[in-house]
Amino acid sequence: MFTLFKLKKFFKKEYIRNKGDEFSKMSISLIGRSISASATLKLNEIAAILRDKGEPVIHLGGGEPKSKAPLDALVAAAGIINSGEVRYTPADGIPALKQAIIRYTEDFYNRKVAPENVIASSGAKQAIMVALQAILNPQEEVIFPAPYWVSYPEMAKMIGAVPVPCLAEDGSFYPRLSDIERLVTSYTKCVIINSPNNPTGAMYSEQFIAEIVDFCERKGLYLIMDDIYHRLIFDGRKPINCYNYAKDLTENSKLIVINGVSKQYAMTGFRIGWAVANKKLIEVMTNIQSHQTSGPSVIMQKAAVGALNGVQSSVESLRLTLENNRNVMMERLNAFNGVRAYKPDGAFYCFADFSYYNKDSIKLANFLIEKVRVVTVPGVEFGLEGFLRLSTCGSIKDITEGIERIKWALDPDSPNELYIGLRKLVRDWL
Figure (cartoon, rainbow, N blue to C red):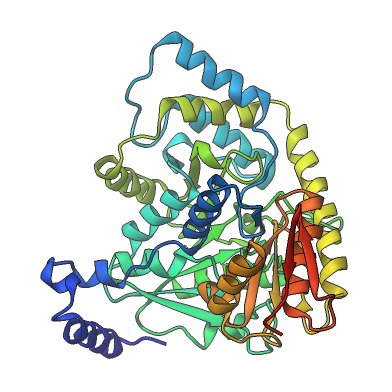
């Protein structure tokens, strides 16, 4: 855990270490030097390059569904394009989108909010980033359970704040309140909860959500609920409504709920997300966003309105597809000697322990790309070494063939040869 002293010491060491390097010669800031590229986006780029070269790549690292965006969204976007009225929008979103978000919040959270409680952003990622910029001072701390989404630590570092990952003491993917409590210091300002979780697919219990809402209220901490996957859950589970456990639902509330159209509507490229919070905080977030990017694209906002107000059958169809894909992946991984796979409760990832084969997840992921052209995401990027994040977004064929290739590359009991299309591979490294 970082303290103020440790943070200052870190930046001092970084300054000394980089004093003569190319960053220093270019006068790059200490914060700029500390930020790494998004591992998931980088892997998407690698996969695209290999595919362009004609390589038979299987992408098990992606975080976007393969289904089409809802027709209502596409028709709405086409309508505004055809009108020719593609103009600037208010920094916090067009009225039609804010009204759709208000209705969504009422339908799924039983919470009636005003337009002043809502900001639309260019993706849920921007909504989280603007929220953190609005509430965190340099050197203040933000706590989030680990494994965590790759961007949380980098977002904190970009504003000079201190990321504090929280691993469950029992070694599971399900933290307890006591795990969070032990990390809270006088510098702690915020807690982020992502459930279902990226990368594990773990859906935190109703008891934990109730406890963390109550704890943050008692301690005066901001609580960001990253609910981007909250409708993509399996095995008969129901979304958990954080507002049910909040005692303070006034404009003094420090509860921030994040959502968007990217995951549930398979609209990743549309880049529309939102935050619901107290009016003063939304005002500050709007001011920040107005100087960053202004309002999101009117085309994309209209598309989001179409998705939110249109036929909702695509969400359930996607959920059922993902649940079936998860079952297939678990079946394949459970037959894989040396791999420990944990059954996801939702989202579209499986976080599997491959440390039996290689404890260095970056080396392992690079090995699998090189040898069998399967893209995975190293677990260390999510705060846990020895694991790989495998996506269930692709087709059943991708999942079965991808796991088959990985097993062939790692398991010494597999046959010595493998055909990928017409290409015969001979394993000479085991």
